[in-house]
Amino acid sequence: MPCFSSQYTLILILYFLSTLSSLCLCITVACDNNYLQHFCKNATSNTAKSFQFHRDQVLSTLVSNGTRDNSFYNATAGGQISDETVYGLFLCCGDLSKDACSECVAAVASDVVERCPIGKEVVIWYDYCMIRYSDYSFFSIDEESPWVLMWNKENVTQEGDAFVASFNYVVGLTMNRLVQKVTSATKKFATQESNITASNGKLMYSLGQCRQDLSTADCNRCLGRVIANLPNIVTGKTGGRYLSSSCNFRFDLAPFYTLQAPVEEALPLPRTLEGKK
Image 1 (spheres, rainbow, N blue to C red):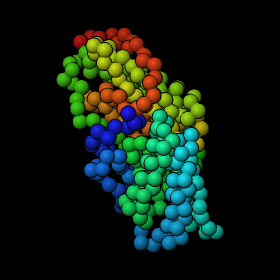
Image 2 (image 1 turned 180 degrees about the vertical axis):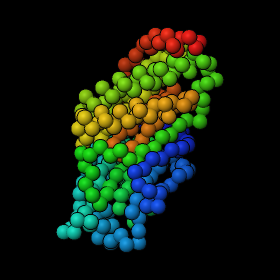
Image 3 (image 1 turned 135 degrees about the vertical axis):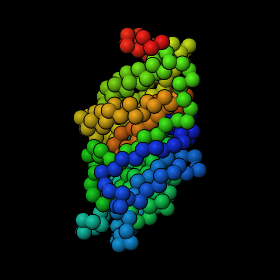
């Protein structure tokens, strides 16, 4: 099964450092299977034709490098004028095959021009990959925005208080362990499968990833923002995810990636949680 399931549905929160007046964004989920969301800024009729030309050059270069083993590539194209230069990159989910990554990058590169034809600062997320480009260099920079939170429709509350308490605890514990695994991995990608206490053998599947051009410190910082948002991500749903242009995190009761990480035995619940059974 590919990295991200297309069964995710609602996008509920988007945070940006810019004002809404400068944004052109889509706030509903499209019907196609892989598209999740996009962010499109500085989309004006004054966008130079030369910028669009160089954007197309960057996208073409990204597509032609979609089969690289490391699931990541960046490219630059431009002229003598600084605002004509375009910087772009793609990031595929770390468990994708080279062919699947290439197909995703090609699809996104085509789609993003349709969704944001004149934007100068763009991020588009699909289930399997992301493309980011801009009129300024963001390479090796941890970008705090934009970021998106998403949730499953299904609730875990119907499983009972003991399961919910254990589930929430395991998500937090797993996220902290994923940070260590992701930041030390060559591709800055890791998965984790954990047993859930009082769940009759149910597993929680989780995944974390950073852009490969980020330093270990910046990757750690980005995933730290995920941890800070866990109360908003773990909302009684069977799964949730955090997407940004620098890192991403997802957890779910259903498997959604191809790598088989070692299953961790669930640790005993803290006494404060045991008392809620």
